[in-house]
Image 1 (cartoon, rainbow, N blue to C red):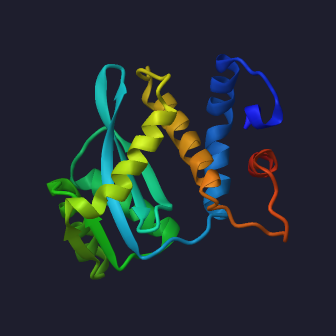
Image 2: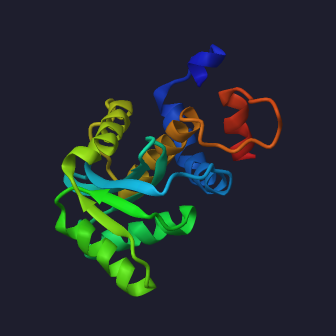
Length: 192
């Protein structure tokens, strides 16, 4: 966005902005996010924090729109169920969820189905998950300059900020007016 505006900013300044504004951006974006489809692709990817692997749970719909994301220190049934509860709380209940062969994700969806009395269809076909796998790649490509995070909170702030910017680029923000503002105006409307 700074390149679009013709600004030259040091990477340390950008990192400080991310730490300061990413939580505000994320909260305000969730209130104004466009609705997503009812067929989701759910998966997790790995991020290094202080030399240890942590898990970024992500879901996209069949059109490639980001449903939700959550950083977790563990990859188990409770982490998958917590992610699913957050995603459903923000986006509504899907009809079906496609997952890979991960037992934790299947157990998390089954746990949610038993707890809430819903009947979300689970499909375990790795080829249908190519959409979310490609989306993981695009996210990690944005983070190529970051080799490892030192703190979990910093990793969460940077990843959530990157996710919000990527969702803005995917045009997932609901606009009130008739004209679509430029990216800087969108960003500023979320911060203020």
